[in-house]
Image 1 (spheres, rainbow over the protein chains, first blue to last red):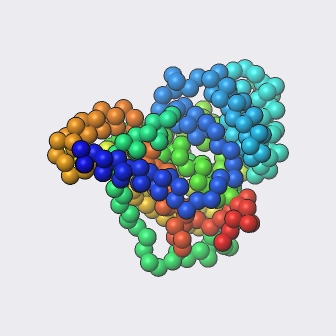
Image 2 (cartoon, each protein chain N blue to C red):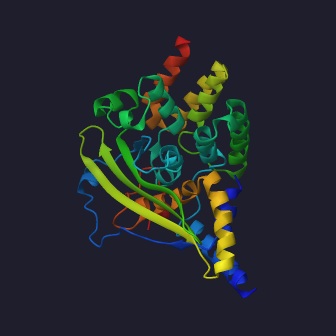
Image 3 (cartoon, chains in turn cyan, purple):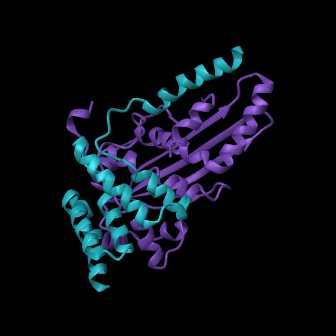
Length: 119
Length: 212
């Protein structure tokens, strides 16, 4: 009985150390963004655009309540999902929001916006 | 998505740090061309696990963004390139820099190579290892701003042969279906990007009050 307990103790000690490290609290509200990016590739059938949009809209509300900005790329990703769903107006709005939040994205977002107006 | 925290908790974790040479990195080029934005391309995968490229790619945005950089939306970029005749990471890594400047507008490109990615099963233990290299290149000049690498290993073993045999069987069942290496990749990033005197410098969005 002693061994498994020791193992459990070791695990419970190791995990917090690994995951907290020396980092201070995050600047951005990450929500499901990373998991959705991963699932898009690892299990595409589990991450259809409709479901991703649902998660991201929820995250957006939570970010506002937490008074934190959403990370770089969040609005662009959401815009791309709207585009996939044929919601061009919402897509356009998100691409513009990405540009406003992060002017560094301007060249790429302008390209996305130009693509929208072509279709 | 909860498994991310649960599975490591089930295992006794041993970590192996490598790299971390003693001589500090020469940041002269980095300081001369400090980027605001970083385009991360899908990593080249030299491991035998086909999940290496995207299992790793999805973990890179967060550490770079939290260090103060604008990071281009990985899925949108990847999809855009695929639609424009570049289906693989290998082809994307060949894009000329002036094209990246024109199409994406990035200040710097981060090229990552995943050297090792995956889990190995011995009789009583399982070992997951992820090793990666990164190279940050200035888009305007083509100068290398930074290079780094890191490796993290995690294994399970308690010293009790019976318990380990059971645990190894469970590990194998869990690991082969859950892409355990993906959950180790964030630690590789922490090591590669934030190790003092070897990691990246902070970017323009990094809060001043957090700098030490």
